[in-house]
Amino acid sequence: MLDNIKELSPAEAIVALRNAYGMTRREFCEYFDIPPRTLQNWEYGSRTPMPFVIASICKCYETEQENKRLNAYIELLNRQNEELKAMAAPRAMAEEVRALGK
Image 1 (cartoon, helix red, strand yellow):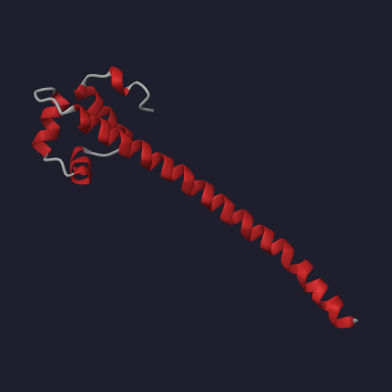
Image 2 (tube, helix red, strand yellow; image 1 turned 180 degrees about the vertical axis):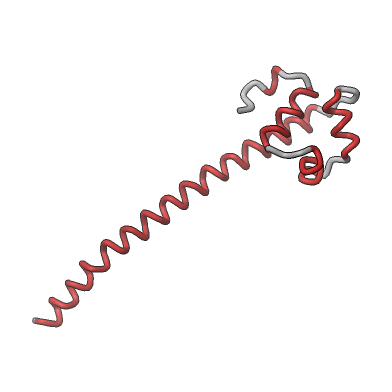
């Protein structure tokens, strides 16, 4: 989603990042501890954030997206594990019953 972030102006990059997060200005400011006036100045282009600010927010976004993907995989694996346990339980019980009958 942010593949072209380096091609954007700093103001456009900040807006793109905020939109990628799906946050209002207030939410974005609270999340990243940025004074609202500072964000407003960055988005309007009257001030320019230091390049590391954009890079850091971008890295946070990428990391959070990767965490979401990994958590989705973990949930899938947990569901599959539970299904396998459920499938194995009757077989194990049948083996126990057979062993008792001997």
